[in-house]
Image (cartoon, rainbow over all chains, first blue to last red; front, side, top):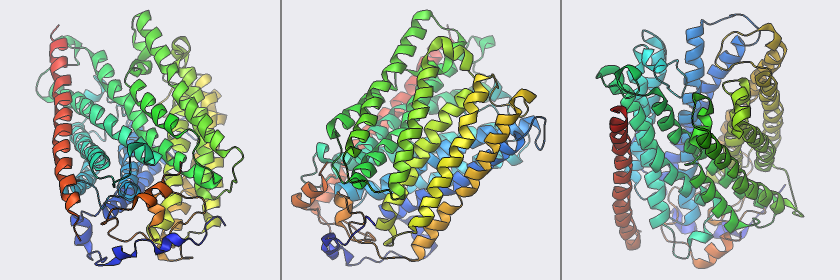
Length: 539
Length: 41
């Protein structure tokens, strides 16, 4: 076992005074404690992961064999649309905000987030937003069915759920912007003395850059959906050609938000992997500063690549060349990261606990998603791939064994710090192996289906696609069922288990590991010493 | 124990938050404003 006794248990026991959180439901409604709010975000994300996952199971059930089996096509389209919205805005983003709430104050030596009441408000907007989105299934016309990209004019033909979805998106956007503001002002104003920017853990750095991306692009999405609303109800013609508007303009605006959004989902994952790999390699992170600059470069490039999502709408050749080449440029800073992670492991003393296993799986499988992204970046080739299952395979490789596996790595990494107990390592490894095997069975065949020409977002397909669809569905059911191990393991860990030490993992360095486990309700009310920070900042 | 430095930190944080919120609102309004002008062409 890699976790050992450590003297850090003796550090900062003075935090224990008045360390009793209020009890009952009101604690969770009114809390301004960053740990409570982090927990609320993570629980919400977990619930939405299973809600969105249930929709994915239904989609794979329908696609198990050709022909319409269970659902009518309109309902199928609603499933794909709401699955995406639930997973992106309900599962992955809140999970990142939850991890940020829990860990950023601990990692920078701050007593809490800078704006705790706004923190509470930004969380409690989310349950209302997603209730609005999900009850769309029960109103005339059904839930939104035009795809998560909300392209007009299709989306304007939706039923009564259309304005509900627009309001829900506004609420989640407001929540994300408030969360991002809180992260930025916390990191910029609340760092302990001695915690210089280039001593911050990579998770904090990647979140800082992500927060700036959020503030710059969430208002763009809000603007786009506001214009959809006025086109639908107030007679404007922003996106209607008959009134002098332009539907393609919506695509430009949406993807100006949408591409940075992809990096919002993945940059914190880079941060987690940059924490986990050095810990379980027992070596400092290779190229810390290069990692920071690579993250910033990726964030910058994300603003100048958006039209690679719309090569087929028709644009000047020079535009296609620009967006093709700028997209390919992203592989350079991403390559820097991948090589730095591999270099960190080189000649390290590696052990393979669940966080490391998920981080390694991330490294391999996210790279596969990156390579298929490079294929999609080639404009003439993209004309073949556009709107096929190849695209579905690509972005699921980036988001499932990418973002979601990194979230799992983060939870497995910090769970002993949160609960004070070690979890069941064997069960965690079962969860890892089942997830990794089934995620490949689920998504790899979708590359073949796409290259053979199967379109995305269809409930029925030609018989030539039957075999790989069946394999993909079996992988989907296996992946979905294996995720049930995760909440069970967490529940078991909360209930009890071997006591975790302060440092938890033998190779862990950072301020959060200087605290006892579980982290007291109030931490760093007195700023950590420079010596503690220097110990924690061994990159 | 409340750290007085923390109170000063939070004051600065509120000011930064206001600036960031204004930036977000300007981007929101700016994109709609640009779209109004483009859609009219």
